[in-house]
Picture 1 (spheres, rainbow, N blue to C red):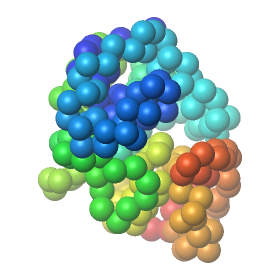
Picture 2 (picture 1 turned 30 degrees about the vertical axis):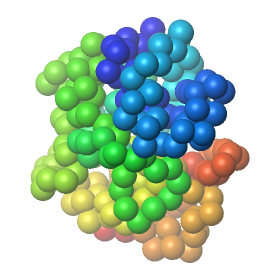
Picture 3 (picture 1 turned 180 degrees about the vertical axis):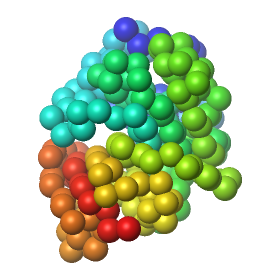
Length: 232
């Protein structure tokens, strides 16, 4: 079972509002996200959150498991949050990958959901690293990057993953130049795009091969893409 401490539980409830109970969602809507984010989430003690979280991310993996490369030495997670999906990937690849995890390192005062040209944040990268260590990813394999600072990655990335982040909450193009520097023609991409903002012709400018592998209909619906052959 995934190990979560008190702080990681709080951050997870901010990052993944589908983990909120019906009452908590109602409270968030009635009292506003500012009070919810900074005060009330500190008092939530969701029972069985570890098991619920493991079930959620196991279901996520099933939506793209058949599209994962046979081997992946270097995996990049953009908008990693707490990095939980990488715990699953680490098991699939027998504890061998290096993980390059990118996100902002702050909690904005008012959390905004939906698509925006501005990249909102509700994360603590130290907590991300601690959580991955606690869940059996070797410290030497964890590489954390604050995207508000200059990023230099010299490794060739085998797999880029971004769930409900790049292309979903903010434009894919934010990371395009970085991807061109550390990805090759063999790099595989799995990421989500907001259905309302998906433009297939635009993504054909970036990739030679695009496949919709999963769709989710919710308040902000998404298409999960599997892409190959980045046009570098």
